[in-house]
Image 1 (cartoon, rainbow, N blue to C red):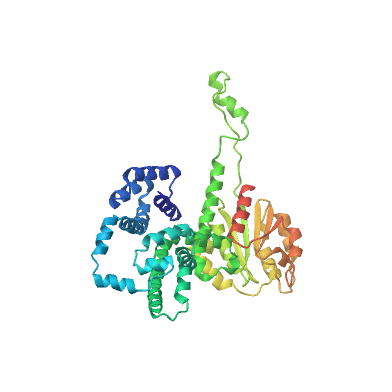
Image 2: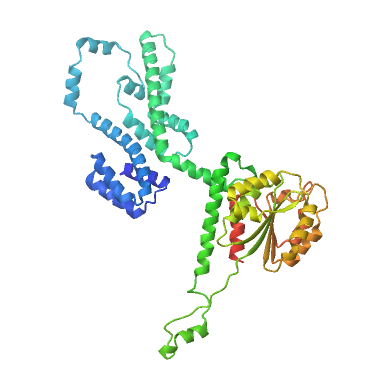
Length: 456
């Protein structure tokens, strides 16, 4: 049953939704039918564990990988249960010369050395050692050598190595040591093959999941270009989850305050008996957003993912105007709405990203282009590190933005202890912000927009 339980664990790691009840059904079925017939086992487990047609391919791959190893172990186990009489007969069949030759050979002293000298099948021993070392917990490919070493140690490699490297003048012992070196090399290769097979079963999908978790918490400013595609999928997935969560909240109608007037009207036909209740629906205004992103060299990567997240929330945030700046303020709303979002972001970064920052000039442009349209329904979000190259930050304009808008959020991609260091003028802007928050990774962005949607 341990084999089946581990196989179910591997299916879950691969993304198949297997419930505890389905696991029990599979274990009970195998308890009744056994593992003797591979075809029956595959069919029974598929019937109890696979619910979606799309999961069938993954199931078939994992079953073939996993149960090939199981069958090898069962074969080895049955070979070792051969009756003693047969063994005696087999040994009696050896020629007298061979027996004399064996008697002359130097016998290995370590248990592992004796097994290898007798050319025993080591598959069952490898499997047992791997289970003892919890090989199914493997996550990274870099752990393969570690587990191979631990399995060898568990099988008695330390004593075998000591025997191989012992100094001796006895020619028979020297010959035996050379043979043991060859046997040990073959065993190590066999162990590595087994570890590789188990890695494919248990860790291939686990590694991808771990990589996603790592990227979600990694600094956006440090994301490498090779990870952009995966990161963009994670950003869009996270935004969809948030959009679905807040869309459902708007559909809730059967809770809150009782609407007495509508309830009485709805029950007028029942002489005042209240059979039907009516609830006050809280109207939630969709937030009107103006997003301003610093796309200078130090912040451009964070700006890319913030804009991607923002435009993936179109279902719950349809009213968004977007601006980017290094020194000049440029509106990119139309570009982001009309072009493919990923191509549009690439174009924005190529045309305006990576230039020297001038917050004063950018805010002066913002005042000319947008300030008149900002009202008490507008939330202004600015992403920037407030590093102004010792220039005038024009905080007077930012003060006007704060006074005219509903809310001002400043998202800074640097750590709090870096604010106001060097040419950063964060403390000049922060009094004119509703909130100043660090925005360093995907988790930060998700949390910021979750609060924005919750309290809008």
